[in-house]
Image 1 (cartoon, rainbow, N blue to C red):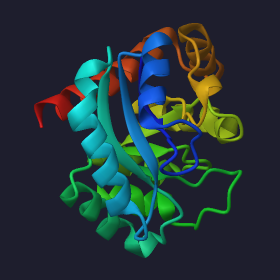
Image 2 (cartoon, rainbow, N blue to C red):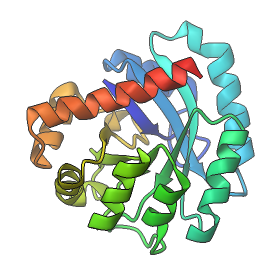
Image 3 (cartoon, rainbow, N blue to C red):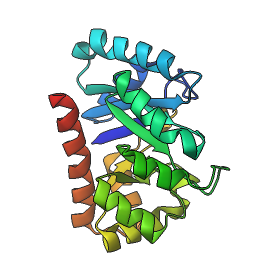
Image 4 (spheres, rainbow, N blue to C red):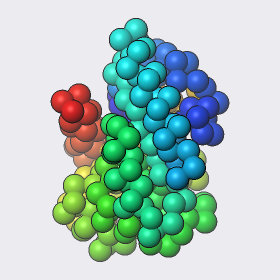
Length: 217
């Protein structure tokens, strides 16, 4: 299993990176990316600390670890600049907090994130067909999430990804130990969203491809 979307004490998670890495490894995860909530105020601080942890400590954990960010509630007009800034600061992966139906995310966030070429658009809520088609063209992965609330629109995201040929990934959006779901529950969430087993396996392969890209970087 791979989780490309997790949070530590550097934003609103409850675990320091070491404990999150350890718990994920024991739970059966092979790779994990720390993607704490970021905007202009903290993006440099987050990446400085997470990159240092990954560089100095990852060899001691039985799991591949990466440092990224989740750009969160960033005004759409600033998202492209923030994506570029995150990459300049050495982010392995850039996630954007999409227009989930359970938070007041600014309209236009999904489109701005896709146009900016982020790696993963998290819980994109009432994604439009035009946005899904653009995600397919730009190679932006759309997230199927196991997280309560955000998962309410998984079915729509899955259907539009299938219709438009967009890539999917499955993430936990983990904030605490209980969010690191089992392989069985992860499969059930994907199937509950309307994916076939073949589509679920393809989503897992998409995450693996992102991991391989980060390892080569």
